[in-house]
Image 1 (cartoon, rainbow, N blue to C red):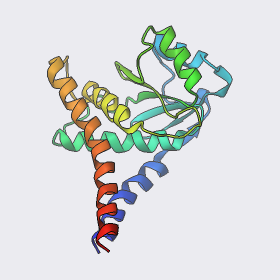
Image 2 (cartoon, helix red, strand yellow):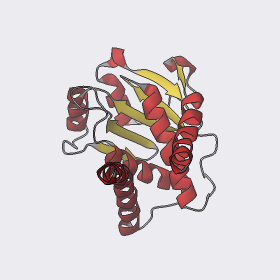
Image 3 (cartoon, rainbow, N blue to C red):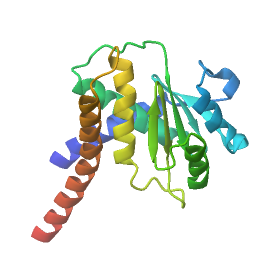
Amino acid sequence: MRWVMIIWLAVAPVAWAAESFQEKPWEKLSSREVSDWGTVALGINGGKWKHGETEHFIIHFTRTGEKAAVRSELFYQKIKVFFGNRADLMPGRKSHVFAFGEARDWAQFAGKIEQPWAAGITRGDEFFYNFSDEAGRMAGKAKVTAHEMTHLMFNRFFVGRLPLWLNEGIAEYFGQRETSTATEIRSEEHTSELQS
């Protein structure tokens, strides 16, 4: 019974987030205003970018928009609950998420914005990240996504700049929490198998 509840709690929000994603052409997006970094991103491998929207995000992607959308909406909900369901200070305004599907495109972007070490970066109400590895898998991106998405949410839920120690501390907490949860589930499964 415990596993049924865990599966339901995991699947229900994912199904809702997936249903809320709608792929749209650039011209039909509710907001096409992007920063200079957004313009740089969309200029790399320009013909491959697709776009879509969820309740809180405009997703720009080159491989799969639905996965990026689901992940974004789930982190939004987790972080909102963490802050006591604090009011979103940007109601009706959507943050832009740029999900690079090719490692070489990400490397080119990171070089152009002079952040070659970055695996993901948030600037204002935009989040840029390398969504998949060289083989196109989402491998190991949960920590970076959770960390950077936390920064993005601070920009939606708080006025002004939080102290750096608080901003980075909570972002690290969420990054670690995402990878720890997956590790703990795998560990529990392995322990159960050993006990059988």
